Length: 112
Image 1 (cartoon, rainbow, N blue to C red):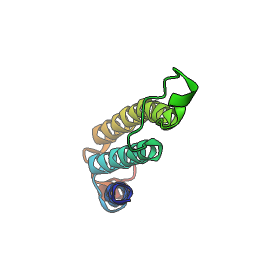
Image 2 (spheres, rainbow, N blue to C red):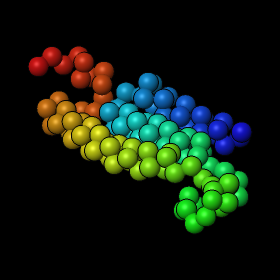
Image 3 (spheres, rainbow, N blue to C red):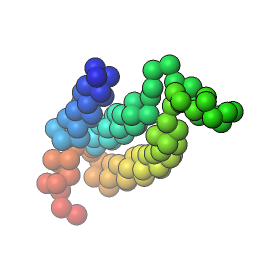
């Protein structure tokens, strides 16, 4: 249960960065922290104590196996998250080239 709480705290740290920070780079880092906390949560859902790898050898060995579905979902979200992160970082660089700052409040004041 404490692992779920630590995962929730990691999510809250990322959400804090996403909501309260004004620097685009810090917002991107907060987005990455949220992504990693959700991946950790999915892995924790499929974990079993003393679990075995889900490889079918005989019917009696399927009793205490780890669920492979969350692991496959996390592999997919890592790839998609990397593509989203690259897109967000490239947008942040384009904003910096245009406005000369990463601060959101200064970008909002500039109209053009």
